[in-house]
Amino acid sequence: MNVAALAIAAALAVGAPAAAPASPAAAAPDCTVTDATMTWGFKESFRSYISGTIANGEWTVADGTTYETPDFGWANGTGQISDGVGQIAFTGSIEFTGHGGILDTTVTNPRLVLDGSSRATLLLDVSGTTQQGADVDEKSVPFASVDISVAEFGDGTVTITAAPTVLTEAGSAAFGTYEAGETLDPITAQLSADPACTIAPVGGPGLAGAIWLGIGSVLAIVVITVELVLWRRRSAQEPGA
Ligand code: HEM
Image (cartoon, rainbow, N blue to C red; front, side, top):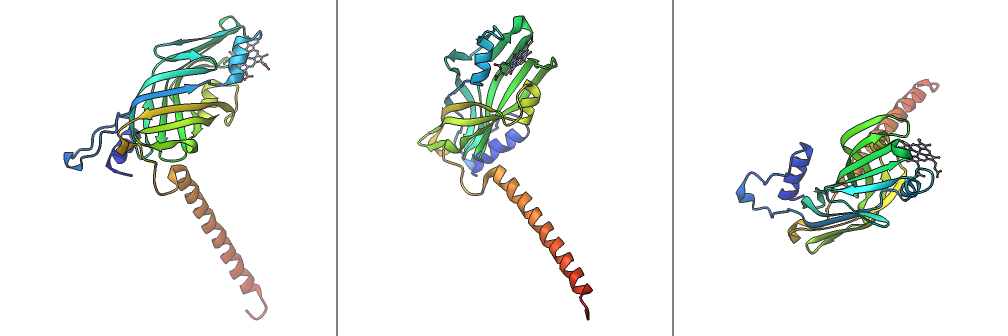
């Protein structure tokens, strides 16, 4: 991870916009994202339900979000990217309504967070009422997990085509109805940046991989320790020991 990636990761960790590295001597490239776009259908079966005879509803887009069957669309995303670490923010809202207004859920300002691993996180602000009738008004919900192993990095662009996307625990809690892991529509996104910033993440297993590696190591140590204790007990119980 280079200096710019570290600066972006640090800024993401404290929830602040990415700041330039403190030392001008570091001369990191400007990794500001340009021309970022994203398309996502949310969930095809939900759109069918909303526009069908059961909910008799509709969706309304505003403030920078568009809709062209079968996808919602966003452009002019802003953010930072370096070595596969960054955040791209889009503006606008989708309001789903149905059942004469009983169903009224709005998702706003999608942000795609890349942490250098093969999974990105889609953050959404979620407000409305769940199917169970609970009121929701939450900012920056880590709504969906996006498999970006399909991403192509290089030449000043990052292209993510039809990345498989699933609902997270937090997304399930905020939206209701669907369980975590429920398949959502795939996400397609593209961005441009200085070519020095659009290189693929290198080395290491990525954050998710590192966590699994850590869990695996702890488990291995526990198993070996238990085996050793059992072996010593068996040895002690053997006649003549
Ligand atoms: C008058 C109140 C409501 C009624 C009578 C109702 C009825 C239904 C029915 C019958 C289905 C099954 C549709 C199918 O199998 O094709 C359904 C699905 C669903 N409902 Fe509602 N619902 C109500 C309110 C809500 C509210 C407030 C929400 C909040 C978001 C909601 C979200 C959903 C979702 C996400 C599905 C699954 C759609 C899918 O992917 O197939 N419903 N509802």
